[in-house]
Amino acid sequence: MSDLRADAPQGAPLDSSLVYQERAVDALGELGLKVAREHLDAVAQRAAAEHWSYTHFLGYLLDGELRERNRKRVELSLQFAKFPFIKRLIDFDFSAQPSIDKRLIEELMTARYLSEGRNIIFLGPPGVGKTMLAIGLAVLVAELGHRVYFTSALDMAIKLSKAIERNQLHRQLNALMQPKVLVIDEVGYLQLDRLQASLLFQVICNRYERGQAIILTSNKAFGEWGQIFADDSIMASAVLDRLLHRSTVINIRGESYRLKEKRQSGSTAGLPSLSPEPKPPTPTGAPKLN
Ligand code: ADP
Ligand code: MG
Image (cartoon, rainbow, N blue to C red; front, side, top):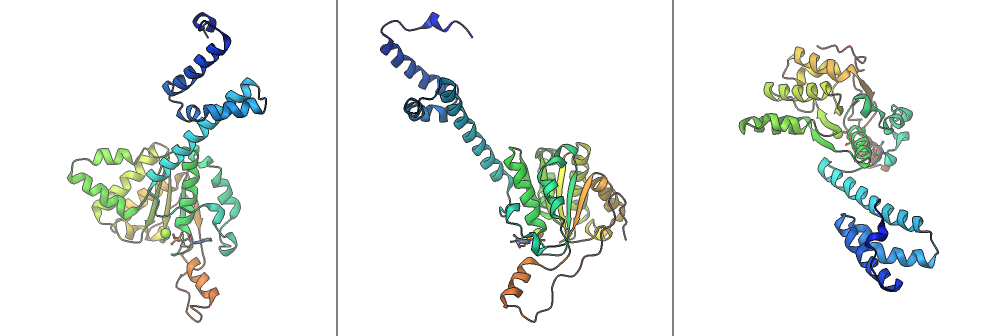
């Protein structure tokens, strides 16, 4: 740091204090430290009243700035993500879903899978919490300050096919590479046509090649994925090959959470379960297709 005394204002100490006080406000503004500037007076008064050291004061002021920046970044990241709802894993009732290994979810909550480029795949019938778990994990990644993006498989495929018409496919595909995590929800709820299937295939391939994680949910066992991919079992096999190469597959069994809640409150007493047991998934790395 240069010799600060060289530029020191002349005059009585009180005057120079006032000059530096004003400079502090301007300098914080120029440096883009808006929160610190806004809180400078209040923090300085508190520091004086509580006899803080100079470094305590400075650390406190800058910490406030960083916290606010982080809060804004997370807020933006959550907006960018386009989640249909925001639910956190802390609200997930594991006792209602004994087929889920809580420790495995806790391991995923460490976000180690991101650096490993590992995919997470939730399989199971409707209502068992696949989307909630996918969102819960992605929210954690957003809270780490990363970009995440949520889409259903069909919406993504439709968006990409429209991009072809506008000659913007490359740009759109590139945009889907940017998020640290891409959540592809509801793979298999609706059958894709050939073009849509090949677009989904491209997204999965591109992210696989760059080691970028995908969190995917599906109601279909891997053996049925040929149907999802326009009855093209070769394409489905190629997708599964990449998806499962580095992956954690969580197969959720049991009935719909909503239905269970209703049943417990008595409003659907006597109704049969609407959630069939899914077929067991094919072991990781060895996709089998019909
Ligand atoms: P899926 O994607 O498997 O169809 P969702 O994740 O959409 O299921 O879950 C349906 C609804 O039930 C959501 O509102 C979700 O938050 C809630 N839900 C599902 N499972 C649980 C659970 N174990 N604990 C708390 N809420 C749950
Ligand atoms: Mg869902």
